[in-house]
Length: 121
Image (cartoon, rainbow, N blue to C red; front, side):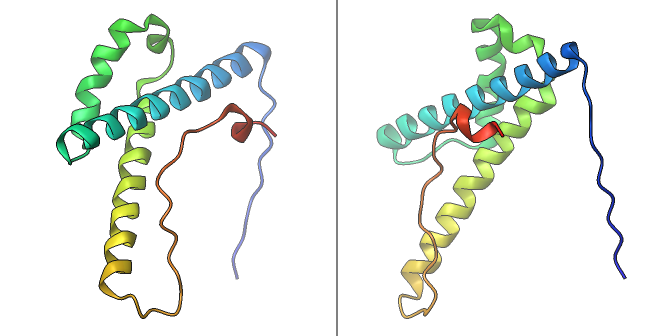
């Protein structure tokens, strides 16, 4: 038997603003490094890793001061998600190339830009 609990949060206006800032900054970091990844891939034939993006993130924080207002773990989580998305994409692509006779078709969609509408109710 499995039990589940549902929790409902009622943030104050300040907390809601902080949450929205965190989500917006995370989306910005994801989209920025997705574009950087594509640009690097076109130039060198290899993409960026999480560690390369993390080094660039500190430089990005000096360029955009408002990125310092949110928690650093939220921004790093966006980088982990981007790295994981590309790892899964290339894993599926290689599996698809190796076994073309598979009955199930794996999705070969690259990671895409995150839009604000995806984060709203």
